[in-house]
Length: 289
Image (cartoon, rainbow, N blue to C red; front, side):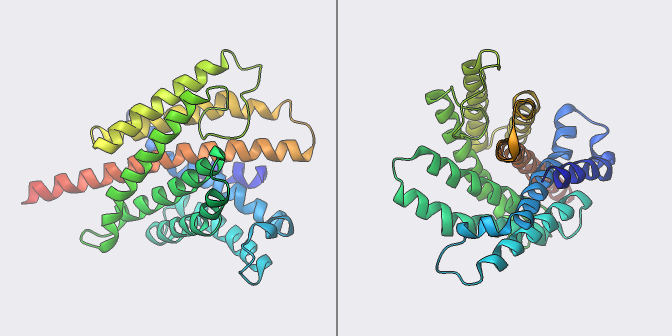
Protein backbone atom coordinates (compact mmCIF):
# COMPACT_ATOMS: atom_id res chain seq x y z
CA UNK A 1 0.00 0.00 0.00
CA UNK A 2 2.62 2.51 1.06
CA UNK A 3 4.87 1.67 -1.91
CA UNK A 4 2.07 2.22 -4.41
CA UNK A 5 0.92 5.44 -2.75
CA UNK A 6 4.39 6.96 -2.40
CA UNK A 7 5.34 5.98 -5.97
CA UNK A 8 2.27 7.67 -7.43
CA UNK A 9 2.76 10.68 -5.13
CA UNK A 10 6.35 11.14 -6.34
CA UNK A 11 5.45 10.49 -9.98
CA UNK A 12 2.58 12.96 -9.76
CA UNK A 13 4.70 15.72 -8.27
CA UNK A 14 7.26 15.24 -11.04
CA UNK A 15 4.73 14.87 -13.87
CA UNK A 16 2.83 18.00 -12.83
CA UNK A 17 5.82 20.10 -11.76
CA UNK A 18 5.14 22.68 -14.47
CA UNK A 19 1.70 23.27 -12.96
CA UNK A 20 2.71 23.69 -9.32
CA UNK A 21 6.11 25.36 -9.70
CA UNK A 22 4.79 28.91 -9.95
CA UNK A 23 1.84 31.07 -8.96
CA UNK A 24 0.18 31.87 -5.65
CA UNK A 25 -0.05 29.35 -2.81
CA UNK A 26 -3.61 28.48 -3.76
CA UNK A 27 -2.72 28.02 -7.44
CA UNK A 28 0.15 25.72 -6.54
CA UNK A 29 -2.03 23.75 -4.14
CA UNK A 30 -4.80 23.37 -6.71
CA UNK A 31 -2.24 22.03 -9.19
CA UNK A 32 -1.37 19.31 -6.64
CA UNK A 33 -4.99 18.36 -6.03
CA UNK A 34 -4.97 15.56 -8.59
CA UNK A 35 -1.79 14.17 -7.01
CA UNK A 36 -3.34 14.20 -3.53
CA UNK A 37 -6.28 12.25 -4.95
CA UNK A 38 -4.17 9.87 -7.02
CA UNK A 39 -1.83 8.77 -4.23
CA UNK A 40 -4.61 7.49 -1.92
CA UNK A 41 -6.42 5.87 -4.85
CA UNK A 42 -3.25 3.96 -5.71
CA UNK A 43 -2.81 3.04 -2.04
CA UNK A 44 -6.32 1.65 -1.76
CA UNK A 45 -6.03 0.01 -5.16
CA UNK A 46 -2.94 -1.86 -3.98
CA UNK A 47 -4.83 -2.90 -0.84
CA UNK A 48 -7.55 -4.42 -3.02
CA UNK A 49 -4.98 -6.43 -4.96
CA UNK A 50 -2.93 -7.52 -1.93
CA UNK A 51 -5.84 -8.36 0.39
CA UNK A 52 -8.51 -9.31 -2.11
CA UNK A 53 -9.85 -12.29 -0.18
CA UNK A 54 -10.18 -10.28 3.00
CA UNK A 55 -12.12 -7.55 1.19
CA UNK A 56 -14.52 -10.01 -0.45
CA UNK A 57 -16.80 -9.71 2.60
CA UNK A 58 -17.54 -6.08 1.69
CA UNK A 59 -19.12 -7.05 -1.63
CA UNK A 60 -22.94 -7.19 -1.28
CA UNK A 61 -24.20 -10.74 -0.95
CA UNK A 62 -26.56 -10.48 -3.92
CA UNK A 63 -23.66 -9.90 -6.32
CA UNK A 64 -21.87 -12.86 -7.96
CA UNK A 65 -18.09 -13.26 -8.41
CA UNK A 66 -17.04 -11.41 -5.24
CA UNK A 67 -13.33 -11.85 -5.85
CA UNK A 68 -13.65 -10.52 -9.41
CA UNK A 69 -15.23 -7.25 -8.21
CA UNK A 70 -12.52 -6.69 -5.60
CA UNK A 71 -9.79 -7.07 -8.21
CA UNK A 72 -11.69 -4.93 -10.71
CA UNK A 73 -12.05 -2.08 -8.21
CA UNK A 74 -8.36 -2.35 -7.34
CA UNK A 75 -7.27 -2.02 -10.96
CA UNK A 76 -9.83 0.76 -11.53
CA UNK A 77 -8.46 2.80 -8.63
CA UNK A 78 -4.88 2.46 -9.86
CA UNK A 79 -5.91 3.29 -13.45
CA UNK A 80 -7.73 6.40 -12.23
CA UNK A 81 -4.66 7.48 -10.25
CA UNK A 82 -2.44 7.19 -13.33
CA UNK A 83 -4.98 9.03 -15.47
CA UNK A 84 -5.06 11.97 -13.04
CA UNK A 85 -1.32 12.46 -12.65
CA UNK A 86 -0.51 12.04 -16.35
CA UNK A 87 -3.57 14.02 -17.52
CA UNK A 88 -4.83 11.32 -19.87
CA UNK A 89 -8.54 10.57 -20.58
CA UNK A 90 -9.46 12.54 -17.44
CA UNK A 91 -13.04 12.99 -18.65
CA UNK A 92 -13.69 9.26 -18.70
CA UNK A 93 -11.66 8.36 -15.64
CA UNK A 94 -13.49 11.06 -13.68
CA UNK A 95 -16.90 9.92 -14.88
CA UNK A 96 -16.24 6.22 -14.31
CA UNK A 97 -14.45 6.54 -10.96
CA UNK A 98 -16.94 9.13 -9.72
CA UNK A 99 -19.79 6.86 -10.73
CA UNK A 100 -18.07 3.95 -8.98
CA UNK A 101 -17.87 5.85 -5.69
CA UNK A 102 -21.54 6.79 -5.94
CA UNK A 103 -22.33 3.12 -6.63
CA UNK A 104 -20.51 2.27 -3.39
CA UNK A 105 -22.76 4.77 -1.63
CA UNK A 106 -25.92 3.20 -3.04
CA UNK A 107 -24.91 -0.44 -2.54
CA UNK A 108 -22.98 -0.33 0.76
CA UNK A 109 -23.05 2.99 2.60
CA UNK A 110 -26.76 3.77 2.28
CA UNK A 111 -27.85 0.32 3.55
CA UNK A 112 -25.40 0.81 6.43
CA UNK A 113 -27.03 4.12 7.34
CA UNK A 114 -30.51 2.58 7.15
CA UNK A 115 -29.58 -0.29 9.49
CA UNK A 116 -27.51 1.91 11.85
CA UNK A 117 -29.53 5.10 12.05
CA UNK A 118 -27.94 6.14 15.35
CA UNK A 119 -24.36 5.58 14.19
CA UNK A 120 -22.93 8.98 13.26
CA UNK A 121 -19.90 7.37 11.68
CA UNK A 122 -22.16 5.58 9.17
CA UNK A 123 -23.44 8.98 8.05
CA UNK A 124 -19.88 10.32 7.92
CA UNK A 125 -18.82 7.38 5.73
CA UNK A 126 -21.74 7.91 3.36
CA UNK A 127 -20.92 11.62 3.11
CA UNK A 128 -17.23 10.88 2.53
CA UNK A 129 -17.81 8.49 -0.37
CA UNK A 130 -20.36 10.88 -1.86
CA UNK A 131 -17.81 13.69 -1.69
CA UNK A 132 -15.14 11.59 -3.40
CA UNK A 133 -17.53 10.68 -6.21
CA UNK A 134 -18.86 14.21 -6.70
CA UNK A 135 -15.38 15.74 -6.84
CA UNK A 136 -14.30 13.35 -9.60
CA UNK A 137 -17.52 14.02 -11.50
CA UNK A 138 -16.97 17.78 -11.14
CA UNK A 139 -13.46 17.42 -12.54
CA UNK A 140 -14.84 15.41 -15.46
CA UNK A 141 -17.48 18.07 -16.08
CA UNK A 142 -14.87 20.82 -16.06
CA UNK A 143 -12.70 19.14 -18.72
CA UNK A 144 -15.65 18.19 -20.94
CA UNK A 145 -16.06 20.18 -24.17
CA UNK A 146 -18.22 23.28 -23.83
CA UNK A 147 -21.83 22.46 -24.50
CA UNK A 148 -21.46 18.80 -23.53
CA UNK A 149 -23.97 17.33 -21.12
CA UNK A 150 -21.23 16.56 -18.58
CA UNK A 151 -20.46 20.25 -18.01
CA UNK A 152 -23.65 20.47 -15.96
CA UNK A 153 -22.10 18.26 -13.29
CA UNK A 154 -19.92 21.00 -11.80
CA UNK A 155 -22.64 23.02 -10.08
CA UNK A 156 -24.56 20.19 -8.35
CA UNK A 157 -21.28 18.60 -7.27
CA UNK A 158 -20.16 21.92 -5.76
CA UNK A 159 -23.40 22.13 -3.79
CA UNK A 160 -23.14 18.55 -2.52
CA UNK A 161 -19.50 19.08 -1.55
CA UNK A 162 -20.51 22.23 0.34
CA UNK A 163 -23.27 20.46 2.27
CA UNK A 164 -20.88 17.69 3.32
CA UNK A 165 -18.29 20.27 4.45
CA UNK A 166 -20.94 21.97 6.60
CA UNK A 167 -21.98 18.61 8.06
CA UNK A 168 -18.37 17.74 8.86
CA UNK A 169 -17.83 21.19 10.38
CA UNK A 170 -20.75 20.69 12.77
CA UNK A 171 -19.41 17.24 13.67
CA UNK A 172 -16.04 18.78 14.59
CA UNK A 173 -17.68 21.23 16.98
CA UNK A 174 -19.83 18.52 18.56
CA UNK A 175 -16.93 16.05 18.90
CA UNK A 176 -13.63 18.00 18.83
CA UNK A 177 -11.79 15.18 20.59
CA UNK A 178 -11.75 13.04 17.43
CA UNK A 179 -9.18 13.29 14.66
CA UNK A 180 -9.73 16.40 12.52
CA UNK A 181 -10.54 16.18 8.83
CA UNK A 182 -12.99 13.41 8.01
CA UNK A 183 -15.02 12.47 11.13
CA UNK A 184 -13.41 9.14 11.93
CA UNK A 185 -13.81 6.70 14.79
CA UNK A 186 -10.45 7.51 16.36
CA UNK A 187 -9.47 9.98 19.07
CA UNK A 188 -6.73 12.52 18.42
CA UNK A 189 -3.51 11.07 19.92
CA UNK A 190 -2.58 12.48 23.35
CA UNK A 191 0.82 13.67 22.09
CA UNK A 192 -0.89 16.24 19.80
CA UNK A 193 -0.81 19.67 21.55
CA UNK A 194 -4.26 21.05 22.46
CA UNK A 195 -6.12 18.35 20.48
CA UNK A 196 -9.54 19.95 20.92
CA UNK A 197 -8.27 23.21 19.46
CA UNK A 198 -7.33 21.32 16.30
CA UNK A 199 -10.86 19.97 16.12
CA UNK A 200 -12.41 23.40 16.53
CA UNK A 201 -9.99 25.04 14.07
CA UNK A 202 -10.53 22.50 11.28
CA UNK A 203 -14.25 22.58 12.02
CA UNK A 204 -14.30 26.36 11.58
CA UNK A 205 -12.51 26.07 8.23
CA UNK A 206 -15.01 23.44 7.12
CA UNK A 207 -17.97 25.62 8.10
CA UNK A 208 -16.64 28.77 6.41
CA UNK A 209 -15.55 26.93 3.27
CA UNK A 210 -18.81 25.02 3.08
CA UNK A 211 -20.86 28.21 3.43
CA UNK A 212 -18.88 30.03 0.73
CA UNK A 213 -19.13 27.07 -1.61
CA UNK A 214 -22.86 26.75 -1.02
CA UNK A 215 -23.41 30.47 -1.70
CA UNK A 216 -20.93 30.37 -4.61
CA UNK A 217 -19.00 33.32 -3.15
CA UNK A 218 -15.22 33.03 -3.64
CA UNK A 219 -15.96 29.33 -3.97
CA UNK A 220 -12.73 28.48 -5.72
CA UNK A 221 -10.59 30.07 -2.97
CA UNK A 222 -12.74 28.47 -0.26
CA UNK A 223 -12.22 24.99 -1.71
CA UNK A 224 -8.50 25.63 -2.23
CA UNK A 225 -7.89 26.78 1.36
CA UNK A 226 -9.90 23.88 2.72
CA UNK A 227 -7.66 21.51 0.75
CA UNK A 228 -4.54 23.28 2.02
CA UNK A 229 -5.66 23.07 5.67
CA UNK A 230 -6.56 19.39 5.34
CA UNK A 231 -3.26 18.54 3.61
CA UNK A 232 -1.36 20.35 6.38
CA UNK A 233 -3.35 18.38 8.95
CA UNK A 234 -2.27 15.14 7.28
CA UNK A 235 1.38 16.20 7.41
CA UNK A 236 1.30 17.50 10.99
CA UNK A 237 -0.95 14.96 12.73
CA UNK A 238 -1.59 11.89 10.60
CA UNK A 239 1.83 11.04 9.18
CA UNK A 240 3.57 11.14 12.62
CA UNK A 241 1.02 8.56 13.80
CA UNK A 242 3.02 5.97 11.85
CA UNK A 243 5.85 6.28 14.41
CA UNK A 244 4.14 4.65 17.41
CA UNK A 245 2.18 2.18 15.25
CA UNK A 246 3.23 -1.45 15.88
CA UNK A 247 2.31 -4.48 13.84
CA UNK A 248 0.73 -4.80 10.43
CA UNK A 249 -2.81 -4.11 11.60
CA UNK A 250 -1.93 -0.81 13.30
CA UNK A 251 0.24 0.37 10.41
CA UNK A 252 -2.46 -0.43 7.85
CA UNK A 253 -5.01 1.41 10.00
CA UNK A 254 -2.86 4.55 10.10
CA UNK A 255 -2.24 4.34 6.34
CA UNK A 256 -6.01 4.14 5.87
CA UNK A 257 -6.50 7.30 7.95
CA UNK A 258 -3.76 9.12 6.05
CA UNK A 259 -5.22 8.04 2.73
CA UNK A 260 -8.80 8.99 3.62
CA UNK A 261 -7.89 12.46 4.85
CA UNK A 262 -5.43 13.19 2.04
CA UNK A 263 -8.07 12.07 -0.44
CA UNK A 264 -10.55 14.48 1.12
CA UNK A 265 -7.96 17.26 0.86
CA UNK A 266 -7.37 16.36 -2.78
CA UNK A 267 -11.07 16.35 -3.59
CA UNK A 268 -11.39 19.88 -2.17
CA UNK A 269 -8.53 20.97 -4.43
CA UNK A 270 -9.96 19.37 -7.58
CA UNK A 271 -13.30 21.02 -6.80
CA UNK A 272 -11.30 24.27 -6.81
CA UNK A 273 -9.68 23.23 -10.11
CA UNK A 274 -13.07 22.48 -11.66
CA UNK A 275 -14.48 25.83 -10.53
CA UNK A 276 -11.40 27.68 -11.73
CA UNK A 277 -11.53 26.08 -15.16
CA UNK A 278 -15.23 26.83 -15.60
CA UNK A 279 -14.75 30.45 -14.49
CA UNK A 280 -11.92 30.89 -17.00
CA UNK A 281 -14.02 29.46 -19.82
CA UNK A 282 -16.95 31.68 -18.86
CA UNK A 283 -14.72 34.75 -19.03
CA UNK A 284 -13.43 33.74 -22.44
CA UNK A 285 -16.98 33.17 -23.67
CA UNK A 286 -18.10 36.60 -22.42
CA UNK A 287 -15.12 38.36 -24.02
CA UNK A 288 -15.79 36.68 -27.37
CA UNK A 289 -19.45 37.67 -27.30
